[in-house]
Image (cartoon, rainbow, N blue to C red; front, side, top):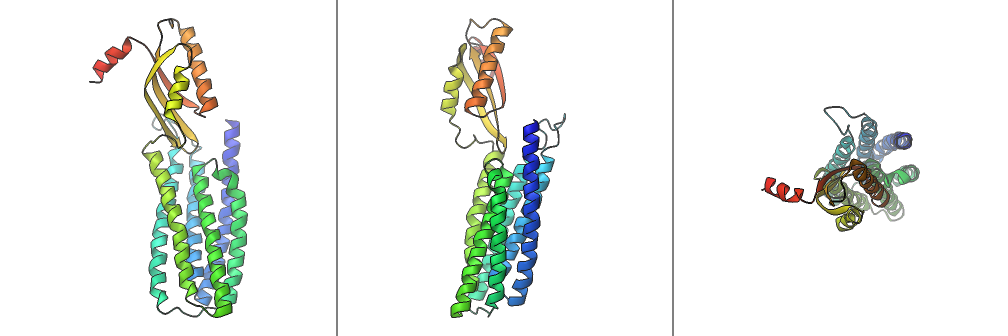
Length: 300
């Protein structure tokens, strides 16, 4: 438990740092975007603002998730992380639509912009985004909420690259149409990330089996434990990121006649699941072979 708490605190510290940097980038890009009239820079500023809101929700959700369980909420508030990630995905999707509408309106008559200022703001934004990616990289592999934040910062970095390319092209060749085109590129970068995040959130809320979890292999491991004859009513789902949960009815042989023997089987099952499948929250219902017939009648 101490390790998990330290890990969560570490995530929160990194999220807070990246949030502060993102807000500074937003202010810079907004001011320069308004001064120069660059839609690409303003789009990236809106992108950063949305991501900052997402980071704020991720930070709050990570703290809420530490609230202990109660009689009403027996799993605590772990799902708050999933809800925050879903809200992030919806915001990204709405922002993408808004950018496309604004960019299409400028394609016919792109305004002139001050490319040097846009270039400078793009360089600063890219540098800050790279720092944010380095801070969140390790946590993104462990936590769905941090992964969502990492994806948003990655999108910001790619958006900054698009701003830089358009600013350089305008500075060299006066191709002002590249500014709204860069905005469309930013929207194209946002859309797949938003859809991917929403898909993952949907899988968690629909209690789908965790990605990469082979249920046939799981059944094989369980039935391979001495004393176990069969398994049915097997359910595996994800409570929140990196927290798979499992329940199953385990049929034991006629030689399992004492609680101590059943205890030994339970210990071996718990060890097997935590070692091979990283499932640390499992519920088993032990039953004799003859119970299957009465259970089948009950389920009719």
